[in-house]
Each structure stands twice: as C-alpha cells, then as structure tokens.
Image (cartoon, rainbow, N blue to C red; front, side, top):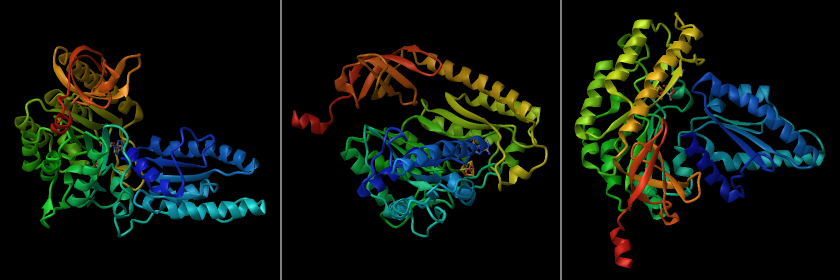
Length: 454
Ligand code: 5AD
Ligand code: SF4
C-alpha cells in the first residue's frame, strides 16, 4: 500500500513540477512515507530524519533548501511528536490527506523562500494535516501513471476489524470502498497503457463493498468477474484479505475467473483459538481450515501465504504448538512472521502476561524454520512443471529476464529481449529456497487485435 501511495504522491506532485529523484542528494524535496505497524518501522523515521537534517543544513548553507515531508501512518499517529522532536520538518501528512500535498508544498515553499530572503531559519512550525477528510481522497487524485506490465490499484482502505494488536484502524481510519465504476475505469486506463497484471489493494481488501453501476453493493467476487472481462487484463491478484470476509461469491470467482491468480495471501496470525479470541480475529483455527478447504475446492491448484504473530500476550507453549500444527495442516508456499510488537493505544499493548523477548525469538526461529521448509519444498515441487511467467524485469545476467510465476515466485530464464513485459510459458528446471529457474516453452499467443493487425 505504501508503494502505491508513494506513486500517487508522485502523480499528484507532477503538475507542480516535481518528478521522482533517484536519491535524496540533489533532490528539492524528500517525502518519507512511513509505516507504523511495528515499533521497528516507526523508529526508523527519526533516525532517517536525523540524516535528512544534515542534508537540509548543507543545502541551506549553499543558498538552497530541501523540503522535508513525513507521510504515512507514523505521521498520522505521531504527527505532533514529529514536529516537536524534528522542528526542521516542513510537512507532516496522514495517509488520507496526500491529495492535498500540492497545496501544502506550495505553502512550505513560500515559507522557505521568505526565510531564505531574510537569512533566517524557517519561522513557525511545519504544516500538519492528519485529518480524515469527509471527501475520499481518490476523487481528487489524477489518473495513476503506470510503467511496466504490472500495477497496483487501490480499491479499499481502512479497517473496522480492530484486531487488538493492530494500529491500522487508528492510522488508516474506517473502512472505505471505492465505487466500482471508478475502479473499472482506472483498470481500463491501465490496460490501455500496457498493464496486463493488476493487484487490487486494500488493508482489508475482501471487505470490499463498493457501489456498483446498478446502485447495489458489490463484493470482491463480483468486482473480480467484472475486471476479468476486460480484454488484455490477464492477471488479477488482491491483497490483503481477511478470513472472515471470504464469502461464497469470492470462492466461486476463483473457480470462474481464469485471470484470478491461484495464490491468496490470507493471514491467520495464530493457530490457537484462545489467542485468536484475544486478538479479536473473529474466527477459530478450524473455521480458517474450512475456508482454505472451500477455496481449494474451487481451484485445486490454489496456494496460500499468511502472516503470523508469535509472542502475543499470554501465548503459551501449547498455543504456539497449535500455530505450528496449523502451518503443517494448511501448508504455505510463502509467509511473513513477526514477533508481537506492542503498539501504543492498542488493547493488546496493555494486556498482562507480555511474552519475554527471548521466548519470542525462539518461537519466531522455530516457525520460520518450518515455513522456510514448506516454501523450499513447494519450489522443488515446481521442477518439471510449466508455468506462465510475466517477464517484467532484466535478469542479473546478459540475455536473462526475470518475472513472477502465478504464485509470485521470482523466476529467471534466458529469453529474448522482445519478451520483456510479456507472459511466457516456462518449464521450471531449477529451484532455490526463494526463486526458480525456467526454460522458454512459448510466449503468450497474440491477442485477437494483434492478429487482426498482422
Ligand atoms: N506486532 C507484530 N506484528 C504485527 N502485525 C500487525 N500488527 C502487529 C504488531 N503489533 C502484522 C500482522 C499483519 C501484518 C501486516 O503485520 O501479522 O497481518
Ligand atoms: Fe489490522 Fe488486518 Fe486486523 Fe484490520 S484486519 S485490524 S488491518 S490486522
């Protein structure tokens, strides 16, 4: 989501003359787009700001300036603290306010120019906007610029689930779904610009309930059917979904929509019912197993990834063993796992029985060993299979291209440069713990329009 948001910030700033730079040195403005999900991510912001301050001082000494903005969820949660601890910051803006960036930048540029003319440091404090505006920001953003064949498309934001460990409902705000017509129009524009794979984004993407053309609420399954009918859009993914919001129509869409990739990120967090309850996840481990079975019933080549938290307050050895058991039962082809990190203002941060760091370390190592084995075993099982790979990057060696399998595995292959940006059928001939090697079988068949032109 932050990668997508950063792109949209670049889009919104383009009309006032800003373009993305490769590095902070030499740039006129740096925006830190920040994440508040775990403590480590939030801490990084202040150390990064320390480095940028040096750069700003150097530029000012040379008669120029460097505007510094902090965006994203740390800005939302700790905006006042940022301005107090780092008064040299020019702009602090939350994730629902970035459509207002041009205004804020213009205001900051004026303040900086006045200060420079007077030979003084900037007067007053930086600009702060961490409102959740009544008007959704999407109505004010320009069409996203795309480069390459794969793109993100945000369809939903915010979350009303209030898992007891999570800051997202506080930093991103209440759940909001974009109207179907706006999403479909954006997808069509992307496809016209050469995109063949779209990843639908949302903190709680399958809670999507956008207004359809007929005035009724559409769920994610129906949206996927609509997008699946767009000529030239060959791959659709969505992330991140919640087990409670996997409804029958979404399951059926996995059966009916060929473009919907057979890989779902479906975080479970824990395999212990006691901990799932304390996390306010709203489902049990067995209900999760049933959801997985329903999805695999719709498409037997479907595979899963997940997020896990170890060391949630009160987690015992037995609870952790239940998590390992669930991992063994489900079988993940990839996963993210984290030590529980208490977040200020969330209910779990104040729960008794916080788990000691050393225990968290041990559990994380054991869980990751199991998950890594499953990932490596899945990669090995791909050898000999043919897979459609979207070749969207240069490989490390000359004549090599790199792409993603339907399961998001990185795959490298020797392939002609003409295949860059296209889907090619590869036979998998080698597998490492994190990636695959393939040999070219065939490129995608030309579409009907290409045939007509030929
Ligand atoms: N501590 C550790 N991990 C967390 N996550 C969310 N909040 C926390 C926290 N307080 C993890 C969850 C979520 C992922 C995006 O980050 O696993 O699915
Ligand atoms: Fe956070 Fe996801 Fe739970 Fe929402 S559903 S509170 S985003 S972990």
